[in-house]
Length: 436
Ligand SMILES: *Cc1c(COP(=O)(O)O)cnc(C)c1O
Image (cartoon, rainbow, N blue to C red; front, top):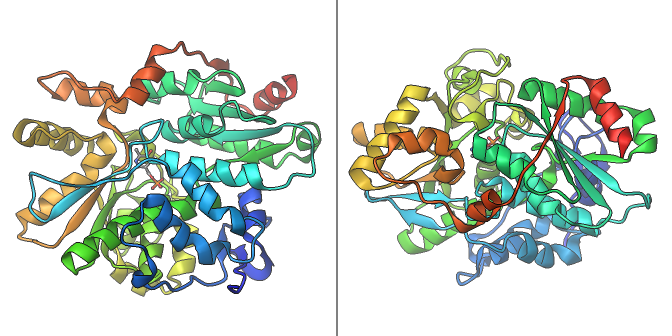
């Protein structure tokens, strides 16, 4: 029997809870983010070399689940949630570099992995309340669809998605509105920040919750963060077995959940080398890592809309992981990539190598292009966070051939879609939630 691992808030370590409770709650009561008491250490030799992604995940996450009510179900949760591949594919443009493709799930973005894992955990956690649970999600595009797909037609759960009307790609909007059944899509006359504020207000509204039990599925949930470590561990272990060296990663970054998962894998003792953060024109992180004070701000709209974040929610977990600020700055680099460079990178790789990237992935690919131009020859994996066809409005005009659509996305686009309009106010959301 392993020692049980307990979890506490990034803001205070006096009160600890088991993992299942941290996953069910999302946010800690003091407004902090849940973290483990300490990150465990793992031996690379403990992983089955013939294992698939779900097997790697079950080995990796066992110490995180030790002693929890969910511990025995962990292999089944991994098998259910991580049932598609996250291949590491060689890049014709750059020798000794690869692309880690995270977009082979049902909604064609990496958010599927966290959302499906969270759903598989919540399904197994006991609830005292027999009434249906409403899962509220504010989304800038990809999270909402992933959460909807993960909970679609699940009994006793409904999903309510809030997205900024007109600020997601047309195909993202279609995906959000195409589920029906227990999924309601609300197009909010405002920005992503408004959606997030409305969801937070509802979650903090005790009177509302007495009538409508609510939960959230946003990116700060441990139930989404932990499984995201699996694909980094799987890719890095595979590379290490084949080449005998650690693998470096370039991660398209918004709220820092994906990049933090990568850094945690390195802290566990697995063969992850350097980690670089690729950001869009929202430069909060690049400025901090270049030496400025941390200055969260309002987001600006870019072509890589899922990374339009001015106050990365997982920064608090990054600080907990690396409490010494100057050591943290030594550890990581972050770079801003503007919209013109995103367009140029997509067009140039399509023309010269027949490779297609979504706008988010293009920020990371540009950093690799720059490293190679400077003479760097280290092994890098560019993390591909979404399928380019999801961002047809950006990608298609840059190509001289049609953009192929993956089957899962094509099936969703063939369905009808509808979303209800909603004013950008807490009161409007409250009334809508009480309605049904
Ligand atoms: C959410 C998202 C990101 C940013 O990931 P974070 O974990 O918020 O840093 C990047 N690319 C795509 C396609 C996304 O959906």
